[in-house]
Length: 114
Image (tube, rainbow, N blue to C red; front, top):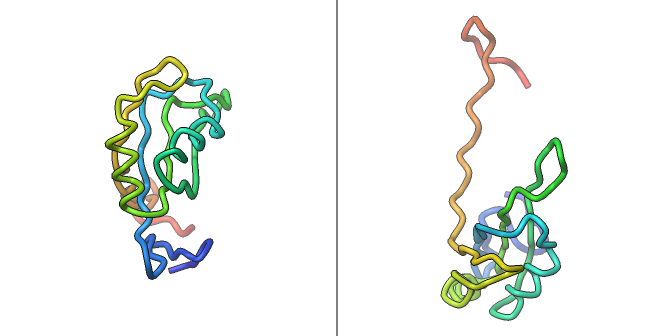
């Protein structure tokens, strides 16, 4: 596990377990600074990530916010799920862990080396 900002990849820093939240129904124009400010009112925000479309570079209408502690994340869900940001009623949930991508295969069915 690789350490980053004093927190290893499992999200544990020895004192707290960080929690990643999925924020849905965002305006395509909402900047990460706005999200950080809104979520910062209910807890300690470690990271805000807004995925963008590969072709247009525009927001895809959702974001991920990593909160320092589980309690911060629970506060964010209870206080901000249904909250209006930039004219949109946002949805706040614990993010699901992404499944590892399956190995790439050649058309003959053998695995490709990466």
